[in-house]
Length: 244
Image 1 (cartoon, rainbow, N blue to C red):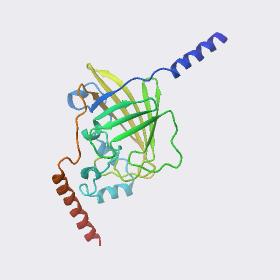
Image 2 (image 1 turned 90 degrees about the vertical axis):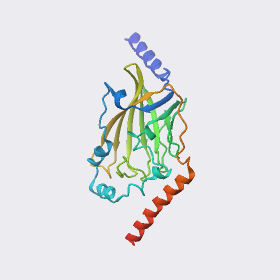
Image 3 (image 1 turned 90 degrees about the horizontal axis):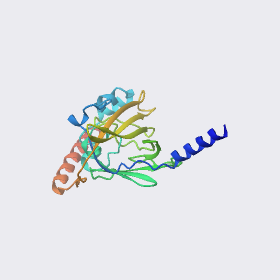
Image 4 (image 1 turned 180 degrees about the vertical axis):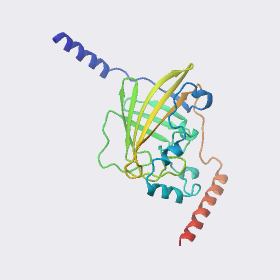
């Protein structure tokens, strides 16, 4: 009995002190042929989210101007919740560190660096932010991430679906091999008791690349960006006049 207990303690200790897997590298959202043999759950995130919206959230979505109100379109933060399914948010550099994991996204606007803090709790009295507060832990070869503390300024999908500060994102990530390629499999679950009738889930796959992450600047062509921004403001001013 004592020997069995000793072996069990040694096994648990070895697991606790095992080195986490090294997933360093540049990953791109898998599409087309790269998804062969992979199980993509809810590939159409727009329809998936809409099916779970509460009535007030559907009305807000219908009243939203998809051009004037899209913060990402004018190089403002867009958050991480609408990330699955877009190349801007789906391409990232995975940088593990001892106390946190940094995900540096290809789209270079101000919300595109995500930090997943390891082996700590969420701070009390969180200030709502675009990316929320992410804490993670390793369960063997799986990274389990819990994120709360979102503001309500972003969308749940590219289809202008709103959410509240009650949004809760749970994720499980693991590295897999398929057809000679390396992927990170992401299983996500989104809850929001005020905006959703029930939780929805999805899976996405990100293929590891052999090249370095390219430079991409949101407003590299400043004159083009100014024109784009002016066009957005005109729509906002027009809507304000109509409301007034």
